[in-house]
Image (cartoon, rainbow, N blue to C red; front, side):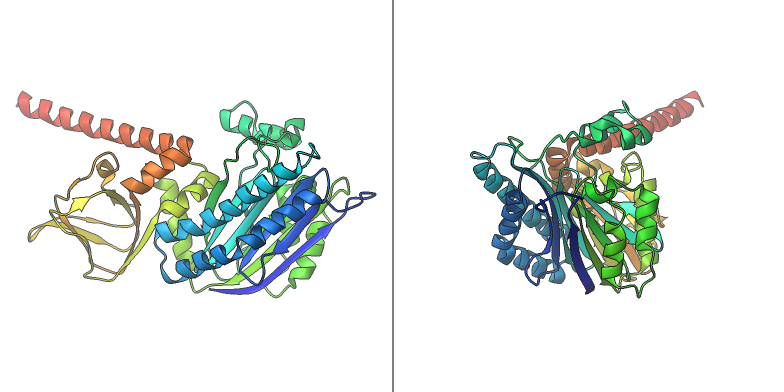
Length: 398
């Protein structure tokens, strides 16, 4: 993974002096942030100070994730971004004792290995642009977005509702922060975008998508200028754009997204909820003949096959083969148990895993996602019990 370019830019609203937003890179790290300040430039400056204060820890976490791509290590990159946002919140709270209207929203991303960690609070958004398609990675912390989640508003209604301006949390003004930490796997040529509502609040999704679609050789300065030009001039506008080079196979990343959307445990999650779940998922690359786990081992992980074929055997007897989209081990999320069979790759394979420990963290940090997974697991178990009961009734009737 290489960073091909990073560019940050901001523009004052017409007649607005001074600029309350900030878009910045943290030192020479592969880390950018965008902060939308309210009340004075002070809030955004304090947020930048917090990120610079946490730069040493950020670098250590990023370096660790470049070497070790396990979920526990990758998650720490996002946690470091979260810590900087929390520190910014505390600094702004302190300053707000003298200026009560002081607050800010913000988002930050860090590129580590073939992944980008994202942390955000409020209505600053993160996007991924790949193969001409724009994908929103974050969900606004606004009353409108909350009502969309409950079904009280449609996304179309939320896009024009005055409730989209009413924040449910912000740095400096909320008693506590609940920072969203997400992750996205990166492909060659991907563009990552952070922007304030001065941009995304002025232009629909399709216009932002077109502004980014200048070709892989386009200068990031030109892309940033096009994005800032989308602003209606009623609010400050700030953007950070990052272009990456990656050796990750874009087809494999597409397969991961497809499998996650089709697997019963994750099917009811939105794309943005799956991004929040992503840091907790292990990626296991297996060569033919590699053992995923042995019969009799303690099992505590649910697995889903993204690519390749796995053989499940007991002793020398092959019980079944599992291809892409197949899964096993969901009961271990509720209670660890000895594995009843050995699972071996019969070809080069990619397997995603969610451990019981990681699942418990998801339940604690993101109850709605945890509840969705738990309900899906219970529903699946109910079908299995019903099927077993039907089979027993059939045998008894013979």
